[in-house]
Length: 175
Length: 134
Image (tube, rainbow over all chains, first blue to last red; front, side):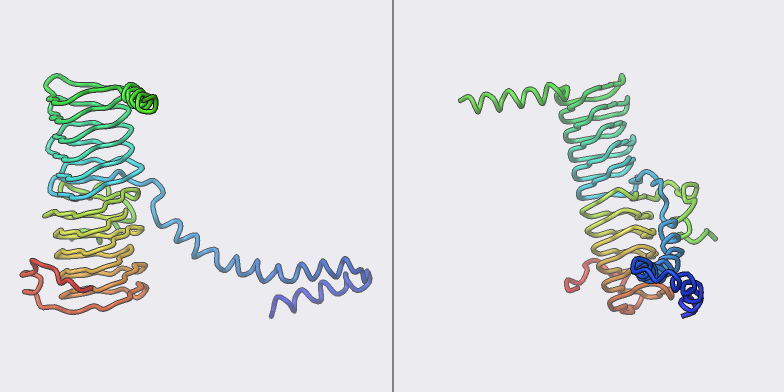
């Protein structure tokens, strides 16, 4: 109410001498704007605080040594695993600590393995450190294996694996 | 005494995160069973069941399913059940389901939909199989 009372004396002297239809339309357009703007201002502060509360930069997930997970893990970010996982892992970067055991497949851009994996690793960059124990295939773009690492399985480059699949498909389609 | 965990979940928890604290990060989604003798902080999404000595569902965290623990701190969202001796529900938490507890601390600004049944201590100590019905 206070707002309308304040604006009316301001607008009437300017609008009355002109008496333009366009001006009238203008004031009509303006009046609904002001309460809306006020509502916006009122609603803004709580909105801002709720947005500010969650941290923007998320910290990497950590599965500690005591934790056992049976199921699937999916993330767009990094995961460090020191515990036990029964299931597949999908993440941007997966770091598997020396005490970790994973029975399942790992998909990611970057995989660093120091623990035990029973399953497939499919990643652009794979690093097997000297304590790594890998039972399964490694599909990679770039692979590093340290002395002492154990591998039981095939190591294939990603492109070649994809090419082989394509070739298989072609054969099937040709036949 | 340690600082309240929901504060840790909001701010500088990195230094506090010790060896047997697991952290389910903001972007991590897990479907399945989580079992630990230690502590888990959940900022991401977990569907399934969590067994731990202490569970903290941080701001932005979401759990669908059952949580069994000695202590549960809820700052995020829960859809499902809690079985815990001590439950702390922090302002801003959204709880839908049942909260089985021995002691509870529910904050003023929390949204709670569902029942919060009290149980004696031995109910939690002898809790091997969870009741089926929701």
